[in-house]
Length: 390
Image (cartoon, rainbow, N blue to C red; front, side, top):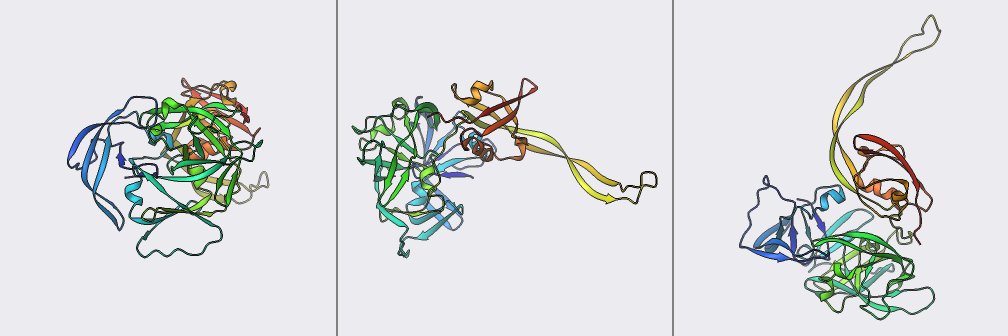
């Protein structure tokens, strides 16, 4: 099974299972499960006394939430099959190093792990609430003031945004005048919308990250999160990926080591397009088997190249637009929800991963995007330039 490693999750959640999956659930009881989003709590099963294993790592007597609601579909939005989310239960017994640059996670024995001196590192104390880690840091909200506002943020490795701040959880935290409305993601209880903006800086000890993007989610979407009165927001993957991160839950510590992407500018999706996986398409491709150069043609006195090939058929992924921001360049160009994206900038999308396509929407302002889409069985071509909404 494929899981998202999400430090923002306490109890493991399992979903996207079907009748072909063989799974023994122990000591079950029906419950209602509430998460982020504006919809009602969803039906789930709480199962106790389970065994989790990952290579040589095994954990016994674990609780598990099982969700059967098909509307919570992370797989289509990530382009790979996702069966669940795991966090605290995998992190609690080890020192865990996440190297975003190398795309590696290393588990160390917490009893024997030795910390090394590191000039590029900063160590922070962690606070836990309902099995979730929080860090106390500072934010510089505007360029007009040198004031550093102290905030308590959830460390949310499963969130793709850089930061979330919750309006009015501190006298200084109010969404700035320059913002735009945007789709922020999906929680267990539905879609999340809010205001997207920039702040002047995030202060992490001796580190300052300049001009991070910040989202201010609608209060109705974060009712569950606001139950913890001391929380002001969260730090997501677009912050964490700039470091090598070492979690040490037993010692209530987290270490951040500056990475090679530390100074990369913060970007956001300027296109206004949100794509999802749309199933597979049977594609016919040339399969070249031979390339030969014939002797001179006596009539033309020229060589001839002879290509010998046949065709191969394979299933390839397709992607469609499932959200379109109304004031965005893509919307103004004439694109529509449910358009199937066939090509982007001359490349067939079935040869690209979902993340490779989405990355093109995070490029610099005025970058031209050319799309060929399928709508009602016909192909159409659209062009637009990425636009800075600020």
